[in-house]
Length: 467
Image 1 (cartoon, rainbow, N blue to C red):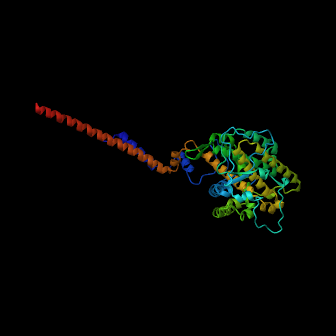
Image 2 (tube, rainbow, N blue to C red):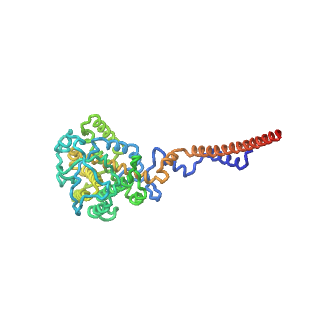
Image 3 (cartoon, rainbow, N blue to C red):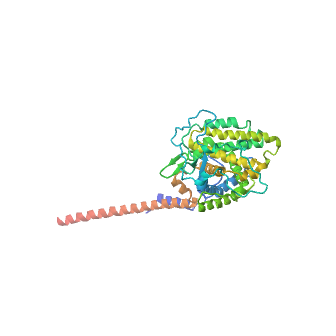
């Protein structure tokens, strides 16, 4: 007979299986395993960002930004960045540092990068005297003079520049430890002083862009902290992320602002980018790039008026402030030459150029057509790759704010995808199967003992008969 304890255990098991209400713990795991994740609004430290909150100085809700980036924009940017046109970037890796004497050498083994081979980059890119691409321009077109006074960034002399393959050297942790000195000089010498709410809109915009860039770079390094060569994946450093970014909601909000600012610049440049010849010598892939760019330019979030640049410098008295900002941003582009890690320097210079291109597109309103139709290829490459990095940082923040040590393992992730009711049934069946197996084993042992006992008596009887 089955003992009363075993019957009680079976009763409890089936009661759990029939329960329709899942525990809060299981519900939270189910949410993390869903295909449409929630916004990166809360972390374990309780630093909350309201999903319905409007991004500061913009017209877009946080959750709207996150969902459109996750479902629509980020996948497009990731695919575009893998194409030949967008993975080659031109820069001067050996420009001198204007602040201190630098050896240009990084002590970490992950800092060095190699320039592209002669045959790797499209040959006619090097043969062209300018990066400008011939497109149809509107009537009454006035040429834009990209002299130093009009520039937002300084790229360097053409003869000193070379191409690198961004796909080979992703933005990630290299072990470089002197970045804090560079950021200190950027904030100390090139950002406006005083509390943020006391600044005018233009000063806030400038500060948010620099802070957003800093936040994105820090997030990328934490998300790609250690490379696992066997699996080909990157392991994050979540404690460092929390220290640098996660516990500062204002830094995350500044990243959101910078992302929307770049999207607005892309929208304003649409007349050029829609008909631009993304030419690398591969007609099939070049056509795919143009189709994807048109899809990106028609995405809902990009077409929405999330930032109004007409509110900036709309007073003649602010022209002096505008020139001051240009000088500050040019200084920042030069300070990035003080980064001794080559990989870090390459991505920093690219993203500064991307933001500088966005500033040029949105703020040179008097010459908007001239600016847009005379963007250089390197500026377009920088603009798209910078937007992609900011987009990836938004995705990485969600990942690192919702991740737990358990959820980083494959087994936990798989169990998180199981419905709570199904999980109860699986556990219940497991307990039932275990109890049933024990009962069978007990019965088998009982029968075996009886057989052995009978067999012994039988042998004894034979011996008695012989005697």
